[in-house]
Image 1 (spheres, rainbow, N blue to C red):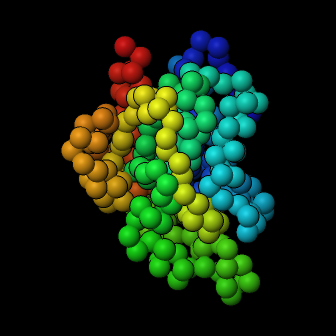
Image 2: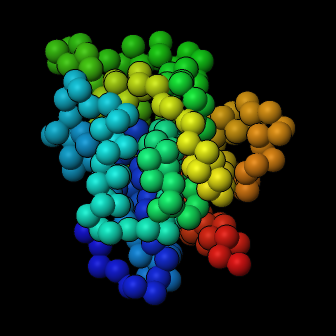
Length: 246
């Protein structure tokens, strides 16, 4: 739950694979609390909710997590920001409640395609994940987390902060296809921020016509840019939001 200012803009940050709501802490200190009501939910089976992970945890579970925040916080006119895997999550939420979302911001994130899974969108990812499944703990439905360095984090203090908080990722979050068909969700303004090779590849795989539909920014400071360059990212997000408010 967040204590909010009724005159401020609702902004919800949704984390990616292996992370939790904790990963935005460095970033939000650069956002004016008088301007933004900030929500930092943690998806089921991750972060402080990692004890809830089970073999049935999937993309729908995480979409429902965010829908429940909207419901119980009585939210509307929300700027919804998704990092990495959460591009799938926020897109799924937009399919259900497009009338409650003002702007979608994809931060080095998946750009979904109708009927495709996260594995479908990234060639070779399924083989990589198969090699990280936790058969040794009799939990083949969990995938070992990437390391901080694999998330492009190199600062020693950041590594020490992040490493103990990273947790395995439920396998079925990446095997479930997402339907992207709602014409109203397609009308929601969208912005993309590229911060690493993953996001750049995801964005560049689109056609020129598709690229032109996005408000596009670059801050190439590594995939976990909310940790490696929080102040600069906060500045870009403020620009995107201000532009949309004009």
